[in-house]
Amino acid sequence: MTDLPPSEDEPRDRRREPIFAIPPVVVAVLATLIGAYGAFSILSPDTQDRVMSLFAFQPLRLSLAISHDRLAALLARVNTDPDALAEALLIRQHGGAIWTVLTYAFLHGSWTHVSLNAIWMLAFGPPVARRFGSIRFLLFFAFTAIAGALTHWAFYAMDFTPLVGASAADSGLMGAATRFVFQPGASLGSPAGRSPDDEQGADQAPAARLIDLLRQRRAVTFIAIWMGTNLLFGAGAQSLGASEAPIAWLAHVGGFLAGLIAFPLFDRTTRQSA
Image (tube, rainbow, N blue to C red; front, side, top):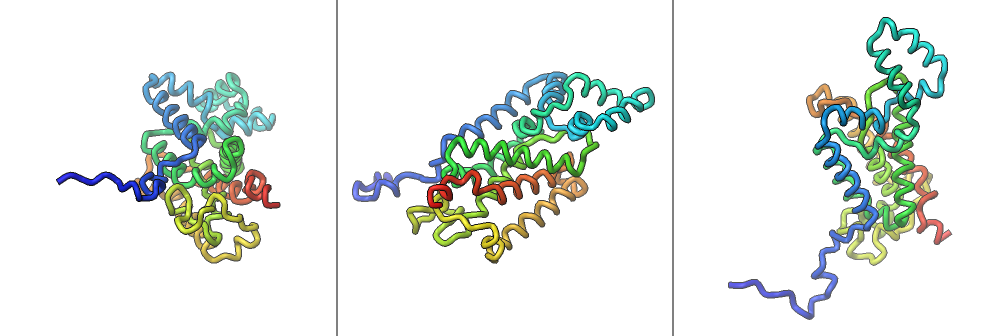
């Protein structure tokens, strides 16, 4: 018994799988993240270390670049502290490496790490990209990644542990999506971020003002659950054995809040209806 081909009377849209209608800019970012880690993974350990020193975000480098007192204190420890010597040499080679507040987002620690970030981007990236357009989406990705790095730096200014991964930018996409997916007629869970009962879908639904959003129970519940889960897994993942390395959960919070608050600056749908 053979399967019958789709009926010609069946609507063309039903025969297509809209779930694959991912905006090209999202595909490009995903390909860059996965390709970057794929290339990184085949490098020699020494070359990987050099890539990390050039492109991973290390809070202490930024702190020393903007504070001469902290740099002087580090140099005073060079003769007695081997770690201080290594840090001083890195600062001498690359200075504050200000570019790392963005480039860290394109590095990952493992295939699991980059895969999880890719999944979150597939979930939240398409509806946000449709609202923003390609250029604004890329600017938003950069903005929330930088916000995440600076939030991490604000709490760990003297830490030399490298920060890598697109999690802060992914969190920014979640924050942005929160502004419109809870509005009437919008559904992030429908294929490609569109509501089957509303042609506009989530990517065209009116966005809520922040003050109004904080009065909506569903939105507040989502934000509370997101914050609680992020705190639980971020602060306790290493001790629970769920992660070998510390999770920079404050960077996630910084990215999420940046996306939630700065959403109107990037939303062309809001601008067109203003």
